[in-house]
Image (tube, rainbow, N blue to C red; front, top):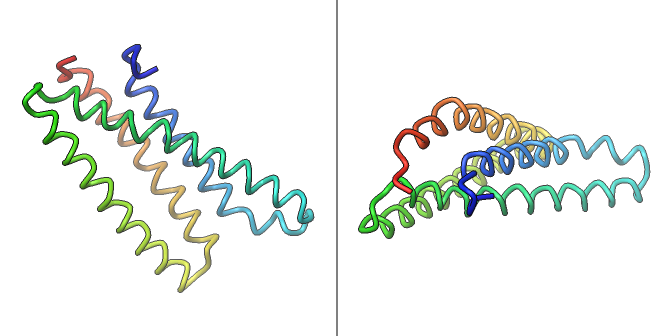
Length: 137
């Protein structure tokens, strides 16, 4: 999809899948009442969703950053993107650990789901139109 120029649609789809995966992880404590087989299948499906969502969003965001810069700015765009991605992962892991320590893992995953949902709405309303106006490729 990215090769066909659908960068923003691919990112939105990936983030939407991640929202569902994080929500699923937050609700997994309810699966225990249904049995271990159901819980195992739920975890596998959630892992698949995480892989699909992040696998679609991660390279698409990189393409978005690269398409906003000139050829001379490609390295800077990639390094800025990777630095902020790593920073976001670190902050997310730290804050998720704090939430899990004070509340529960379910709460941490539900907050993560809500955070990604807010990011998805921000992306659709602000970032995607900016990208469409300013892309160079």
